[in-house]
Amino acid sequence: MKKSYLFIVMLLFAFLVSCTGEETFTQPETSVAALQTGKLSGKVMSQNGNKPIGGASVFTFDDQYKIYYTTSDASGNFILDAPVGNQTIYIQTGNGSNFRTEVTATVKNNETVNLDASQTKLTQVAKIAYVKGSYDKIEDIIQTLGYTATEITNADLANMNTLAQYDIVFLNCGSRKYSQYASLYPLIETNLGIFVANGGSIYASDWDVSYLVGGNDNTNNCSLAGGFIPDTKLCSKNTGSSGMVPGTINSPALATALGFNTLNIDYDLGAWQKIINYDPAYWEVLVKETSSNDALMLRTNHFTSTNVPNTPIGNAPTSQFVTMCVTLPSNVQITITVPQAAVPFLVALGATVGPCSGASNSGYIYYTTFHNHATGNIGNAGSILQYVILNL
Image (cartoon, rainbow, N blue to C red; front, side, top):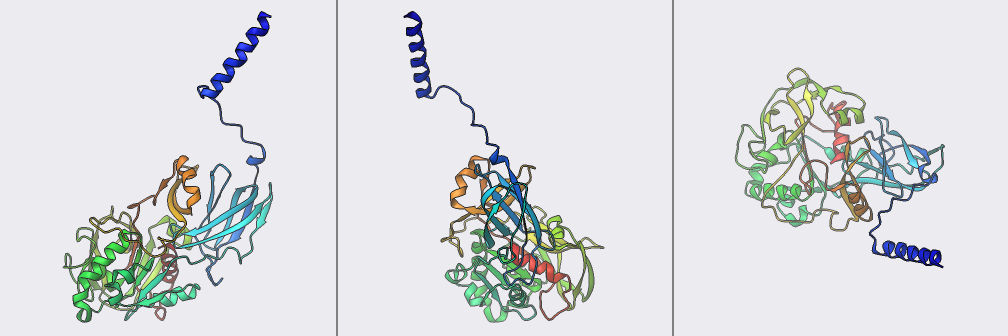
């Protein structure tokens, strides 16, 4: 009888402890099936299927939101290790907010499943606008990839309600008609600062650096009036002379995506903007002149702006996706965009909301001293400009 009584007391004690939650328990062991993986192969292409896309992020998650990640090579090819079962594969460029595609596939243990090319075309999510220039036609390059852009004017840049409809704005060299729109430029520059601070992205070429730092149709000196980039962050002067300039790709990610790291850039017009100095904490040099190391192409690394109103930009108000910084098992950080439902799970694993570099809500600015006109001899620079389009 005593033994039976003691046994009942022990059972009651165990029951009470488990109910109070004071006992520590271990995570259930992962099943063998969850550890099984297969491979997915494919080729990332532009929307019209004409251009392979290098440097695209390709990833998926397992049931515990562990990420499986790779990138496409310069020919657009990729092979992704993935957990077995029905998976959603995400294909993105840039931070994933402007160009992305989702593919559903069944991964088989120790097998390679080839994705059809029709599944891996990169879809345009962004609303894109451009301002017509006198020298450049980035809209033609956008079209050759199968994407669309809407023409807007300087008057539209001065209207925040109009500007805020777009995610990306391209400023073609020669679009800044200062004598015609002089009274609008203070407002235009303020609006562009608001646009980027709230997640919009800008690409400006050559003379259109004046939108960024001030000046008239171009910028002929440092610290001119106007612009929304502080004068301490960038100085550019229109002192370049025509001719072929040997360039070096300074960004490993860009070089990998393109498949080359040197090129000759044809500056076929004189008086192009030479970058005199820049703040390396503010800008990342993507392309430089080989002999002098002068910067030829910049991208904002840490864009910030103070006292800027919170303004919804482009697709942001209706998007069900969130941009996040995720750390890979190799401790490399990547910026990707994921469905909202995945956010709390990724945060629990250490991910953070917002990009891995720069202000959490800001977009990017790309600036090239060289042209993008489709009729000119842009050579390998054309691949660089396609990369810019897809990574804004």
